[in-house]
Amino acid sequence: MSVIRVLPDLLINQIAAGEVVERPASALKELLENSVDAAANEIAVTLMQGGIKQLRVADDGIGIVAEELALALARHATSKIATLDDLESVNSLGFRGEALASIAAVSRLSLTSRRRGERHAWKVEAAGGDVTGIQPAALESGTAVEVQDLYFNTPARRKFLKSEATEYGHCEEMFRRLALSRTDIGFALQHNGRKIWQLPAGTMERRAATLLGDEFAAASVILDERAGSLRLWGMASLPGFSRGGRDAQYFYVNGRFVRDKLIAHAIREAYKDILHNDRHPAFALFLEIDPEGVDVNVHPTKIEVRFRDARAIHQFIFHALNKALSAPIRARQESTVAPMVEPAHPASFASYPRQQAMPLGVAERTDLYATMFGRIGRPEAALPTEAAPEIPPLGFALGQLHGVYILAQNAKGLVIVDMHAAHERVTYEKLKAALDNRAVAMQPLLIPVSFHAGALDVAVAEEHAAAFSALGFDIAMLSPTTLAVRALPALLQDADPVLLARDLLKELREFGADRVLAERRNELLATLACHASVRANRKLAVPEMNALLREMEATERADQCNHGRPTWREISMEELDKLFMRGK
Image 1: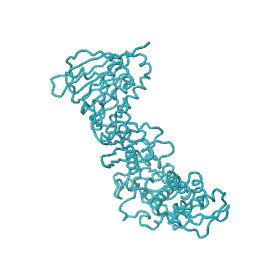
Image 2: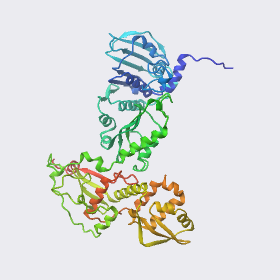
Image 3: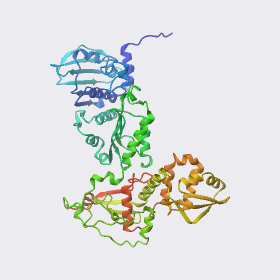
Image 4: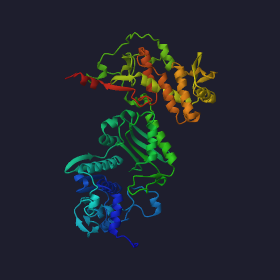
């Protein structure tokens, strides 16, 4: 019969290592966090064979005094917390006092440190948990931790490690996470003698562009929102820079990288209305919160957190991100609108002859389009003249391509607009705003449109008359099998009344008025807007096209249609010149 016994310290540390040091990247994370907590200005990482053979982290932080070097390798020994109050308001990345002891238990480790102001450095070594005596060493400043032969004394665990390339990939990702979180610190990474990254201290924008790519930086919005003690700042990609996976998503709580379902849901909701299908956004976002409002002592890896007021955090993240992503095109590009001045070089926009109004043989009158937008006749609906001070972000229309795309020119070059997708977003946003303000204008039909309906549809129309009215519809029963549409929302007056009524009846029949007007509201309005939007092969006059461009510039989320597809694209003069080999 087995008896209860106290486990030896080495076995305890090896068990802890199984949780804390899953692979070389886990050890690297702990060592990097220690360097950040030590107020380092420069951190250098050296890896051999993906970190399996050797992993070294050196910093220029405050260092460790000689008397505490051996204690630093002891389990639950830390300088970061001392009381329960400290634990409930942790400001440092590390605090458990387990990392170094766990790593030392499954590797050959050396710890060298020189306290600021000391004459020289001191060194202590450990092999499989056995710590040697302290001895003098050479080190300019700070601390250097070198880990060799990870899991040399636990071969069963070592077998679970992957290939060198895979383990290096995990290490580089861990390096990227810490480097993104502290742009005020310089980071360097070397693998198998080759320099991979050399990141000087700088701005968040520069660090993100370096680690996540210039394309991400160019297609991102910068946000900085506050509410009481909460602050959310960083960079989030516009929907046009979506990705197939979640590999470029970095979220930090008080500087600590976390993966949290609550946060992930808030971000998904913010992108829900503009992201196509199962695409994923890219972002580097930082949430600052009172340390007492978040519990980081949830998991040994410290990647999970719990919030005291989870609902408030969710709403704050959602609204802050939604606000940044909802900025109209004109507001977002205000700083880049270029005045019509002499060209800086021969290939600039101003060096090309300006287009004049051209007859397109359009049969439709422009006042038909005015019923959609109500803006025809504004001064900016005309093509630019010599007196025009600046070019709007989407420029001025030149014409249509196959009745599907609007071609326009702006200060940078050519703008191509999917007119149906763009009009769909404009109509959709207007419907949402009208419904939010309970001001959906109703347009009575001169002649009501009747259609055949089943008994269930007739019952739904009678039961949910108030819901129809709130959405701007007036649908009445003419007979047990016939309904009549007597009024439509003014924004949808050019759409097929029967098609709109059937869509609305279907939604109310399946989900009920409460759900349709709440959680399914946006889906319904998107469907209605799609039916009411200008269709392909509809020829538009130049003023009509310009009216749509101006509406897009003033509409939130106008970069994407209701289904997440892009509404416009820009081709610069430099790209066009390269295409036609101008100047070569």
